[in-house]
Image (cartoon, rainbow, N blue to C red; front, side):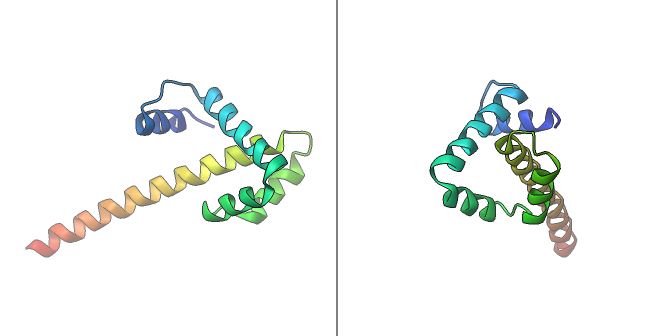
Length: 102
């Protein structure tokens, strides 16, 4: 994982933390859901558009790792993909709009 995640989250929420603190925070919340409300976790992962096959593969390949930490990393990765996609689509839309003005 790279520090880009921390900068985006810190900027968005005006937080002062580092990447490990954020991963630990998210891992703790996911562990809570695994134990107390697994259906809610599934719903969140579905709404976040987490690839189920990729998640299952990562969990199977890393059986000795904390599952919540794997889920947290995948969740963050997916959110970054969405941010990048929105930025790319936004710049394309802006270019199209400017061309249409002429």
